[in-house]
Length: 310
Image (cartoon, rainbow, N blue to C red; front, side, top):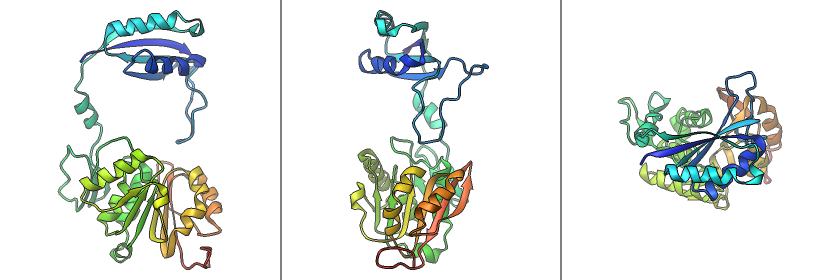
């Protein structure tokens, strides 16, 4: 099916409302927003730290590139929008057909097998695993975060995959808190972890984790966070620094004596904040770093009845 693209130019204050109208009322297939001043002296840096909301919905001057199923639908949407008093400042820049593409093949070409170690790989289902791979997670891009391409995911998997076999054998229980796609829980299972609880606040992530575990022949329990119970030899959480700080008491108390806590989603400059947040319970240290992101880990050497450091 050939699509038609409508290109609108909008001031910042209209971007959000126009985008909502296009998607909710005018039958747009998709809307993307770009800086109309990109690659000029007026280009504006809009997005900041990963995981934090953008300070505005659009740039001072934004391109709205809108896909419609038919040219008629695109023209009707443009006519209706321009007729509204509240859309003053909105203008039509182009109306053009979208070249037909094999979108499945184009999307698949962007995702190659990801090396965690020489022998541990994350491989999309449309690729063959490398010959040297001993552990393979079959995972396709989907709704939930975690395909092995982000540094935080790679660092967590690398830590799990490079532990001594004796330590991996001690993972009689494992908690993946904020499991996303379930990739860390699956990776731990392939390295010997048992009785795995993978929890997330997003029901779509819970379902994605269960589906991915089944596809990889892994047994685990995917559920909402209330399912996490008791202590675990291994607790992993790849989220972001702010929720990790808020979760410090909860995550720390889930780590059993001689167990390990592995945290990711942290920028290098946030290390001291995390160490301070966890200091009543565990001594975090930086174990890995990649592209400005860090992996922080701690081992509980012993605990009193309240889960504080002994």
